[in-house]
Image (cartoon, rainbow, N blue to C red; front, side, top):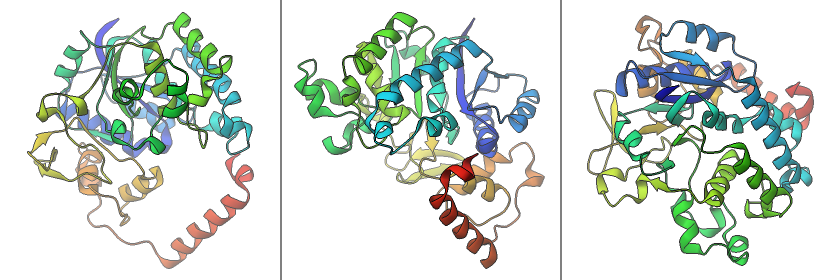
Length: 340
């Protein structure tokens, strides 16, 4: 076992983002911290080659853990309204196994931090690891600021259960793009309790009905297990409370490290949520793609091979744009045919 490390979830589709994340961790967190990549699926040719080129990066290979969390996800999805009503499908979930990030709880690091692959690390995480002496979960997001209608959990139904009140629930709301925790937090008995509560006790209704999300499920799990949780955005120390979203928050770039615009506070990571992996692949190939903080991404993506960084960004041709629109239309009409 190793005392601490970093996990992410990736495959070849997010290769460019993975390389950028790994480089940002090396420069801004530590060049020696061990990193483990959890396989999103079996599409790993480029990822495997990248891992071989880095002394401190490994591929998560605990097949039993992967299968266990895949099975857990399928059982939960089977009773979720979005799947039962046809808004999603088991096949769709099998192609997007985001819950595999929970394999981190079975991994080799006693303490760990998970970064979504569509992120750039911006500062060391020693203080976060230190907080895991007192807390079992560490988050850094603003999910708790959302209105009741948009939160990760259905507050009204939870309140009606009599188990929690609104003031108890809101501080425990969070997303799943960045979190710290410990090996063994979710052991089999606790996972079985959670599964029974969701499936047999119908607490699946605690999750929003419209669609299924790994973030919603993790939020439920951390609430239901009632373990100590800390969110930096609720910290009494104002220096801890920063933004993190590339598409929403204003940041200041100082030597390719981003700081919260208000107060120049260091941020843990820049999260490129709501941007497509295709956009980053195209950006890396020199296409003019509308992504905020794209220069920062390109800096870290090509940090080790600057000669390959695009000299200029060019707009796609009209033919390319037309073909992409046509493909979207066809995909919307025949999603099953294009996904196989």
